[in-house]
Image (cartoon, rainbow, N blue to C red):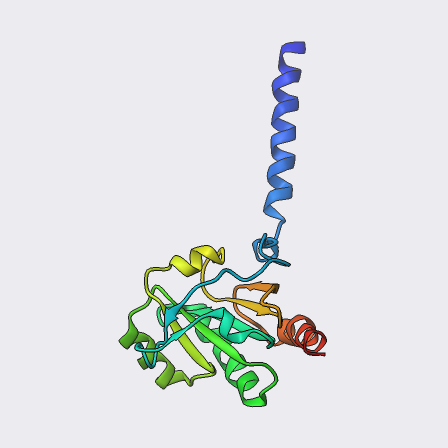
Length: 174
């Protein structure tokens, strides 16, 4: 009888861990980059590949870095929200085109609108790795000192924009 209690106890503990794990929201995984300087890079601009962009170019400004791709279905979901945000001029949005072909990305922006002050091409995905990109889309709020203050995994929704991103941008812009 006692020989069945130990395996039963282990089984119950494993089921409990599984139940807890299945109830976690993967979009709430905290980023180890929050509160740390944004990783440095210098990449070619999507529209003008002869020019480059680096986060150091944004020193003294609060800005958003949105990781997107033309092949990303969820990027289409958030795109109208980003286009509208860009229209307001509240905060500049910079696009990091992730593992995408330049022609495909340019065609996508022409078709759906271009909310970005500029987009940069991360064709190899190396900068995405430095930023801990799980998948596209992802959006980062970066402060005047170049420190990452917020990371949105998955599409930016109107609720996330109004409840988290815009209040943070307003606070950091003071």
